[in-house]
Image (cartoon, rainbow, N blue to C red; front, top):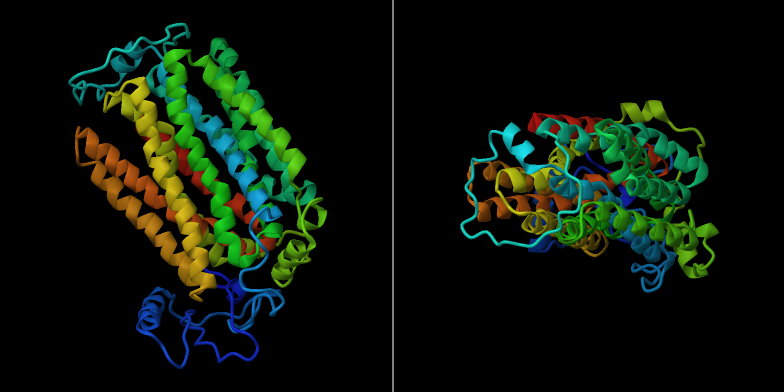
Length: 495
C-alpha cells in the first residue's frame, strides 16, 4: 500500500504492454519516455513536486509492483466495454437519483424550518439579524399562512438541524461491515426508504414538540448513515479502475443536484402551499425511488440479470488483481495506514465547511442577508449547482488524464484534492470580509462550494484506489471525525 499522503497502488492506472519501453522512475509516478514533449516535461516537473519525499514502500499483497504492468493484461481495448445501456452506467444513474433523494430528504428541513418558525422569535434572540438592511424594493407575495408556526429560538433550531448527525454517526462504521454481509443494494435501498418514511412523519413529530422532532431526525440520520459505505462497497465490485472517477462522480453528483432542486422547490412549496407538504412530497419520491432501485440493480456483475457477457468479463478482468479474498476486515492495518489517515484528515477538513453551509445557509440568507423565502431557496441552491457541474466535469477530466494522458493516479488525486480544498478556502474567507454586499456574498459562497466539487475525483474516491476490498469500512471510519466537525461547526454558529 502506498504511503505518504493520499495515494494509490501503482496498478491504479493504465500501463504499457509487455513490449513497451521501460516505465519512468517510480519516484516520480508520472509518464515519460525517451522523447518528451514540452507538455510531458512540464507534467514531470509538476508531479515531481507533488510527490512525497522518501522511498516508496513495496506494495501490499494483491497489488501490482510496477507501473509498467498493464492493468488489464491486454485482454480488453483501452476504451473498455461500451457505455451506452451498460449495466455499470445504469447503476451509476440509479445511484445518482438515489443520492438526489438522499440529500433532498436531508436538506428540506433547512428551508422548511425558516417557514416553521415565527420570525419574531428568531429576531428577538438573534442580535445579528438586523446587521444588513432590508432589500430596497421588497416584492409583496401572497403566501400560504396555513402551516403552524412554532416559538423556537435560534439555539433550539440549531439542535433540531444538528440532531440528524447523532443518528448518522452511529451507522457509519457498521454500514461498511453490514454491506459486506447483506450487500450494498439492500442496505442503501432500505437506508433511504427508512429516511423517506420518517420524513413523512415530520409534521406530526413537530406537533409533539422539539424532543420528538430531534428524535425523528436522529432516526433519519441512522438510515442515511449507511448509504455512502454501502455505495462504496458496491462500486468496489462494479467500477473498473480507469472509470472510477466518472462512475463515482456521476453517482455522488446526485447529492448536489438534489440540493439544487430541493432548496428552491421547498421554498416554492412553503410559499404557495405550506411547509408540511415539503416532507410529504419528498417522502413519497423516496419510496418511489426505492421500488426502482430494488427492482433494477444487483450487488455484483455476477448476479446481474441483464448485463452483457462482454461487459461482465471486462469488469471482472479489470478488478481481478485488485480485490482481496480475505474474509475478515483488517482493522489493525487500516488503523495504521497513513494514506487512509490522510483521507480522514481531508474528509474532516472538507466536510466541516460543506455541511456547515448545507445546514445553515438558508438561515444565513434569511437572518443576515434578509432574503424572503422564495429568494432564499433559489440563492441557497446556487452553490450546489456549481458543485454539481464541477463534480461531473472533474470526473471526466480525471479519468481522461489517467487513461489517455497516462498521468498517474497519485498525481491526479492530489491535484484534484488541492483544487477542491484551497479554492473553497480562499473564497470562503473572502466572504467573511464583504459585509452586506449581497451580490458578492452569494458569488463567493457559490464559487467556494463549486470548487469543492473537484474533491469528488480526489480524496473522496481514494478508498477504491488503495483498498478496494475494504473501501466501505474505510469510508465509514473516515466519516466519524467529520461528523464531529458537522456538529461543532453548527454549534459555533448556532450559539
